[in-house]
Image (cartoon, rainbow, N blue to C red; front, side, top):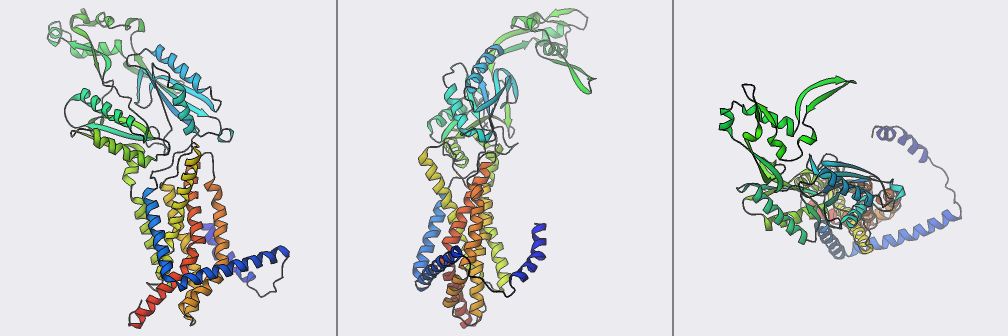
Length: 570
């Protein structure tokens, strides 16, 4: 911006002085002469179209009103989302075996999954962490997390989203495990994976059993809904567990402190922190635990010895009763309430906004009165920002109006420019709709464009670009009107004279954003969203709005003349 301002204030005036010096124009070559003749005919036909709308203001009003209705319909029906899904060159997979499965069994299933993933040469590398539950943030023998990277974008024809769909097709026959795959979150740090995150909260009684029943009912309903591609939770209410009941009275009689008893259990069956030490310039922890051969079965718990206050070693089996039990592996809370996180994604062609609406619909149908739900991650931000795009556009229009009012020193004349702004929004929405419709017919695995934050940034940009074209006509028409021309003649002459510079500048900009609309590779989602909207808006502002702006000028000036005739100041 600083360089642009410097060039505009220093070099541009000098260049204009050189260009505007009187000099003879050459006739040019044959191509130039032919182009000028063709463009002169195009300008003449454009002038006839403007004159037609000037003579028939009712037709112009009906066409303009119809365009506004179509724009409102497209705004309402265009899918919403926070940001587009991006092909980041990798996806995340999670493998879950039945609760209580051994690490060896999990590793065997993971190797089979990795083999099937690598059968597609578009998947370059697979990094597997057996025993790590990435989405739950915990360690579990029955879980595994895989990170699958793809070959560079220019070496593959399918996006990562299509490879996620292929993952499900290749792993659906694995009966002993649940294999899931997710795109990474579009915004790093907002959520654990792409798609939506919703937390089912228990505000009443019933504990983990009741929470598990409601969650399973919710998931069963999502399987029936065609708007969902997948919805799943990694939480289980009936994980096999071992329950230890301590006879506290007997422990007191034998002189065994409870903290010593629990510390012994922790140190032998789990891990026990001892201290830290420094080596190789790093700090290392010393963690103590029994050898695996001494904690292989529940019977090993009874063989542990604990020392009493008198120094006597007492077997824990005399103090503890071991029972087989079941319950949740972890107890999570959201908003300080017991909750279960559900991860999912919409079906092909369903935007994130539509998927969130489907979640709300299923929740209203399945959740009891003592249960509630809350979105988290990117889903929370999307719901929180819903409706902000329209408010942003309104504020931008107000700003444009105030700037034009200061420029023209009138409150009425800027209306002729503002009436041209809806054409930009109409063109942007229309091109997005057309693109989604055409790609939907082809069946290609290409996600639809949505009304996301990048598209809305493009709409704000369009306000200035569409206003620029209208200003070129209104400014010149105002100058001719001040010289004594009637509004109709002033508007018609301004349209003819400004037709060429409007096309030159607008077409240059449109051709400049074509690479954005057709971009591929990393970050293509954001570029396509912004580029498609801006290109469609400029096409409409260039080839539609320029026919209506002269009519808008005439309407405003006639209204101004009537008010002046009544003694009011516009």
